[in-house]
Amino acid sequence: MKNRVKFIYGAIAFVLLFAIIGAVPFVVSKSRKAKKKIDIVSEIVPFVTEEATHCETESETENVEVLPKKRIALTFDDGPHKKYTKEILDILKEYDIKATFFVVGRNAKAYPDIIKRMYEEGHEIGNHTYSHPKVREESINDILNEIVETENLIEELTGHKTDLFRPPNGICTESVKTVAKERNYHIVLWTIDTLDWTCKSSKDISKCVLKEVKDGSVILMHDFIAKNSPTPEALRTIIPKLLEEGYTFVTVSEIINKKVGTR
Ligand SMILES: [Zn+2]
Image 1 (cartoon, protein in one colour):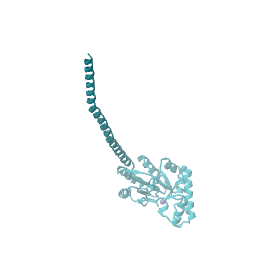
Image 2 (cartoon, helix red, strand yellow):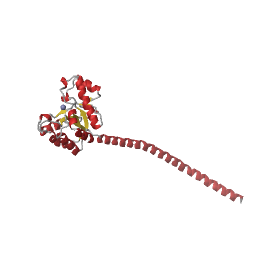
Image 3 (cartoon, rainbow, N blue to C red):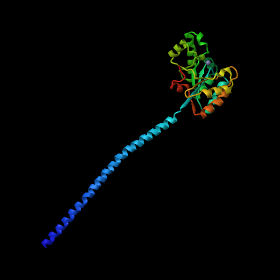
Image 4 (cartoon, rainbow, N blue to C red):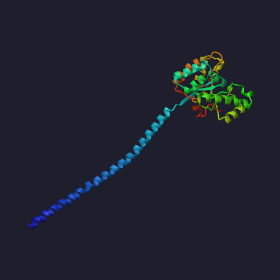
């Protein structure tokens, strides 16, 4: 009996021993598998990071594409004019684009409602002196009065003080520069002169603009022309064509940020 018990204990011990020996490779392989799993995760992490970076790069590219690449500013001088300025404002409204008007103070005083409309419809208003004098013949004090009088009028009508100044005929004398600096104005000239005031045909004006236009162009036109103005008709060709070519029409201030067309 004693021997039988001994045999049973011996058999149990033997089975347990084999069970333990048999379990060793399984445990090792499981721990290896666990290690392998960690390795895969560490391999995945850089991949995920890389993919995220790639995504970021892609979205950055998308953002760049969203920004307008070709920006131009239409500018109109000498107004407001009772007929042509309204026609131009109607066209700009039709195409939902913004422009900049360099107004002459005495005309602004004659047509205050047109100035208010310009401002309300989101256009930019710049100072173009009060009486459009020949600046070379003016004293520094005369130039100062010309600028301040128009500045006050624009502020009175719109509640907004402009910091854009275009001297008559684009003439930048030392006096003009000194006064503009003193009054904190940016002097804005242009990169394309349409010469619309010479009453060339609307077809020639469109041709001139479409040939010379590029990113950052500041286009000089006039909303006040004493004779028959070809400008509104030219705009009906220029605007849709440039929109089709991917241009965005912006105000002069937006172009100035790129340091184009200013002095
Ligand atoms: Zn002018």
